[in-house]
Amino acid sequence: EFGHFIIAKISGIKVFKFSLGFGPRIAGISWKGTEYVLCLFPFGGYVKMAGERSQDETEDSQRKGEIEESIPENQRFDKKPFLIRTSVIINGPLMNVVLAIILLTLVFFFSGIATVSNSIAEVTPGTPAAFAGLQKGDQIIAINSIKIKNAEDISKIINSSRGNPVSLEILRNKDIFDISLSPEYNEQYERAMIGITLDIKIKKLSVIDSVKKSIFTTGEIFVLIVKGFSEMFTGKIPLELAGPLGIAQMAGEAAQFGFLNLLFFTAVINIFLGFINLFPIPILDGGQILILAIERIKGKPLRP
Image (cartoon, rainbow, N blue to C red; front, side, top):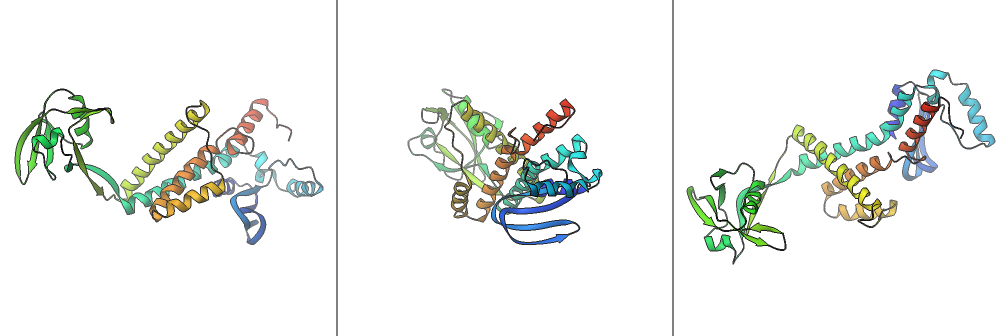
């Protein structure tokens, strides 16, 4: 709601009320012509601007309409250019994404990220690695004379060598030597493996790197949400959406795993809300943008 509010203010639109929540008013103040209120039911909120159309034809709404008619045209939402009105509306979902990026930045800055190293954490008995004599703590520095720059490349090279022996260059206690072995196909994981688990280390990130990682992760989550919805619409996965109580329950479960986990969950919810609000359904922001676009094409407003 602050996204809608701030663009309306910057654009010179008269804002009557900025409400957090719905229902009976708990507290509020008036400042510079705008009433800021906190209401009983904290499920969203709203921004009341001059020039918003009303579908309510009661006497009360007519009186409000008379009040709005006294507002100069340059302060009315409905008299602003198409791009300004669209910006006011779309900045709501955009602020959901901005908040998600801020929350993820905090998560990555304080928790760091897990990175796979080239050090062996465990050797599974009875596997090619065990028979070849690999040990916990060994570092794989090259495979088939290809230097390992990224630990994730180890599994890729081993899988591509299915059925063929590979030569591992190993660093152990400052000694470097080669070990040859043949990967075996694992039906459970559907890939060739040698029977090792690589060590995972926590890498601390700077503020800048945390911001970059949060932006990238936000994009990844957004893609997953789009993919999930497309699979629900095509019937590949069942349609399951949680309401406010379901979200509250999931938030409580996330909080049990720590505050940073709760922040991550909250970020996901914000990205989800930003995506949902862009749906072309009349009550949502995407629906309002669609209506503005239709009016733009027709050249006149639609009837309420």
